[in-house]
Length: 229
Length: 210
Image 1 (spheres, rainbow over the protein chains, first blue to last red):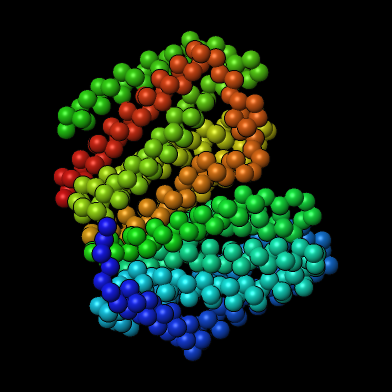
Image 2 (cartoon, rainbow over the protein chains, first blue to last red):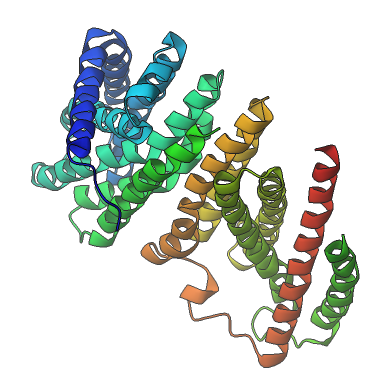
């Protein structure tokens, strides 16, 4: 059984916490999250709300719109977070001081928090403009709470990979989309079931949680191997 | 080298008699007549595509663990071969769907899954194409291949079971008789040897380049 060095895990935890706090602070200080993330989410929601005003919109369409807006509004934040460290030359210093899995986890968790914030803007707007049933709101809200971290976990490792290959950031949406599509389909199916009055399949929630956790764990395991390169 | 030579003999030896047997000696299906014979190509193509993606996944892990260029080459070439068989499975499936369900595309969960798989491995090849440095390309694409393969069991096994499907295994089974099954197994073996032969040839070219 591997021996743990006293104090070493505590140090790792402290550096992880400091990194997480730094990520959140930097994102709010910078204009990218507020300007692009929230801005895009509000503009897209308003445009769709206006375009669909007065028409009867099905549950599947509302669910698809919700997750597509959340995904596009947030997809850039994570890749930027990794790429920024490489561009500013701080990535190597980070590697020297903090184990790379901790950096990866801190950035992915910070991104999960930002995606959740974006969803908190998009979700009420769409519900208000597209006339979602009030009784469906708690279940849909719960799916948003599960789905946002799930989306972040699923794209976290690809975001990290893209930052390792310079000049790849432009291709990020094309490379990450196929990997998160199965999860996105499950989120859309589960949300449309929650919006409708019929039965709700818990299997979809199990698939969403297991798929995203598998992606997160795989990312944590693989990061040190990629770093060897 | 020897492996490649064995496969170059084994592939035609298995494929030619299997094709002749499937097209000429297996009985007609009760409701679909001769149309069902396309499954002798469709099932092996889908099987080989899944096998190729699995091999790519295994050799991507091996590359990250050992850093041997030959593992990266096998992972890369296997994905390419898998993509070709995946396209063939989509085409044969669309032909079958046109005559049985009235449209070449029905958004059936299996059809959707295969499109997702195609997109994943096109993205994998695009990623490789975008990176110039050989070591970086190998490491990053191995990581992507592993994370991409995590979606495959979900697409192949889970998704068709959590949503309703038009595919025969969910609407009463394939209903194949014993001679038909022999045909399917013969073709499965033939296509597997063909894939391994393609893999050994393309991988040999890579090794000569390195």
